[in-house]
Image (cartoon, rainbow, N blue to C red; front, side, top):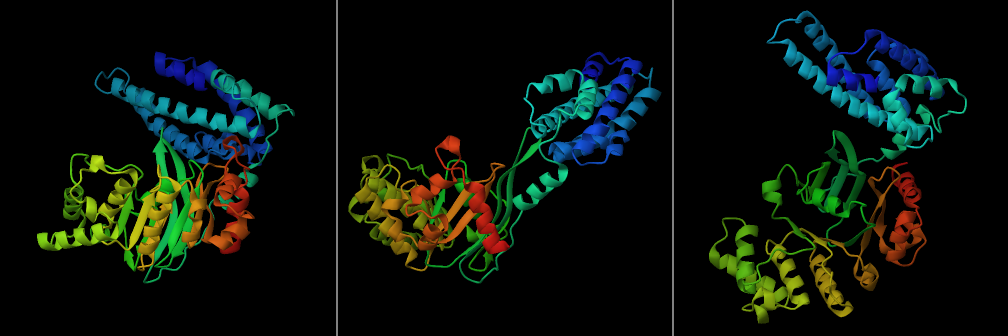
Length: 444
């Protein structure tokens, strides 16, 4: 039917008899495919809805819903096209709309068939036969015993239920509360989960290490916290909602990205004065901004180089300047993405010790670093994100550093990351084990 639809869209003319025969074979084959997958066979007889049922069997329920809706939309369009034959102003337009909907429907049907191929454990090249002759393919897969699904609908639904687990943590008047339900993106008309079910509370005065392998969603997570990329979440900082009160809360959250955007031909003082104009509320006077800049330069040891050009600074000085720019507003939450990148051990420890001092002032400091073990003694807590079997970023652990060592059975933080990384990434592939272990302990 897919092949016939393509021809129909291109030629606007298809043999009704051929279409009927292929459709009958398709329905008959689906009847038995549905039964094999634990679905009801009679659903194959219901026009449009059969694609939703097929999506259930293929683990592509979302795609099934899309095709179901698109197929329903073509019904009135076909009726209009039938009765508007000969009417030059309406028939071509309706035919064009029908063709466009048909093309989109075909794309989603192909995705359903790819899911079905995966469920039945067959090679992807089967998609060619499903596109060219889906009627005979459906009969073959439905009637031949050699074609058996690796799991049924009930198994996939149980898998989804465990995938979508998590419960909110209580919102307190101080500290950071994150109840993130999901962070998604749409690509090629398909919804992908980047993060799911991350619920935690961080007390003031804590320095927190954010761990996770490549693609685990660390940057996506911090962007969701600081409001740069909003998720379906409630982020509360000291009793205020970061999303709903963003104009006020943007001064309470400082974020230092891995790459700085400073102009090399500006002085340190000029750079910080410009940052103060952006980061401090408009009611601050020029004298007040200068006073705050002097305080920050003192904190980060930049006073001796205040008149130096940014391009003349050492790596450590430049890092401290980028951090000082965000610290101008005296934020309650400070997030840093690899602030020690490119620094040697001594300079990295000096920088992290300064961040430890900031946390000791009653602030929350969250740090992403790929070399955590050289400064792990400065941290209080650890957040571990990991990709589950659906490649979605999940919370695998949150707690103190000693608790993390006990939970994963690893002494080094880098060994923890290795344990949750996938085998093709040089890891042990135990992400789902720890995700489920943490979920059962805290939400079970």
